[in-house]
Length: 126
Image (tube, rainbow, N blue to C red; front, side, top):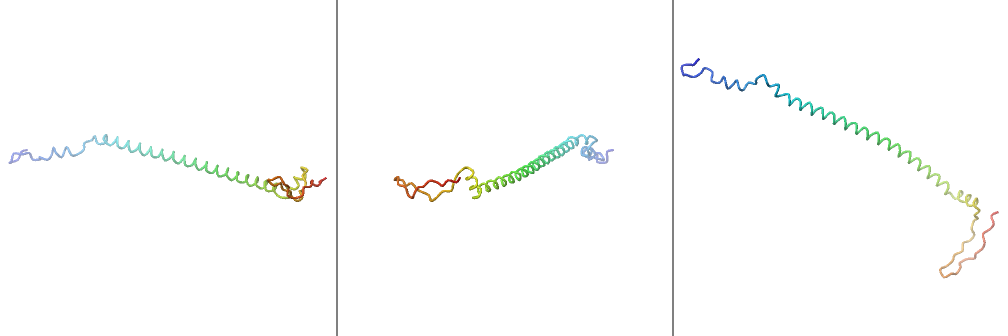
């Protein structure tokens, strides 16, 4: 198969044979495919865990909002009770129940010991 020039008829044959992949190319792809599958699986698992954490936080937030509403309602009820006990009529009634009587004109004691005003005993409420 040598020609008139003394060379082989296909000098490029062995060089091209080295460039064409042989049947073992799937074995070289296996680690890459496995890496991609593991990365995708890990990403999906991380996404699932993140979603679960967000949902748990959402439920906790809803529970805390409900508790805040209940405590606000309780605070408003207690404030209404305080306001009703602090009303002038309620204070007068409770003072009379305790035996207290309304005062007359006030009398003051000055720092030097003198009395300003005319002291008198409280009227008997009975």
